[in-house]
Amino acid sequence: AMLNNEKYISGTVHSIDHNLDKGYLFKKVRIKNIFLTSYQIECLLSRKFSDIFYMIIHKIFSKQRLKFKKIIGKGNFYSNFNLKKNKEIKTFKELKTKLFAFDYNPHEPAYVNINNKKIYLKPNLFFKKI
Image (tube, rainbow, N blue to C red; front, side):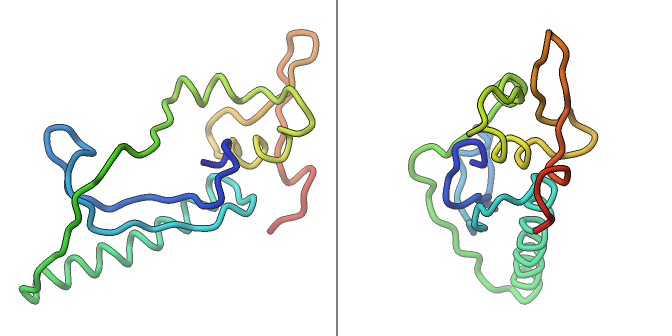
């Protein structure tokens, strides 16, 4: 979502079956894509998911019904292979997006290739913290 410059980054809490993501949706959360690092996005989504899990546990113990919706269509899935091959910054236009998308320790950050050498870049070298 970050690499596609989508307006929002989202995640879902859903039941799963043997087909994994073909279950029923309980809740979808989203945050605005405003050039946060991958780690910052994970922290924000984790807080939202934590609140949802607390609500689920509360409903289960108070014997309230959980409401699910059928998942229609397919969501977006980004494989490790696709992510790894997109880490190289080839144009100035890609710089900010890739710096933030791939800033997540201990994983390889975004880089520029100069004379077949990877020069790794970090967003805090270029942009003040949000």
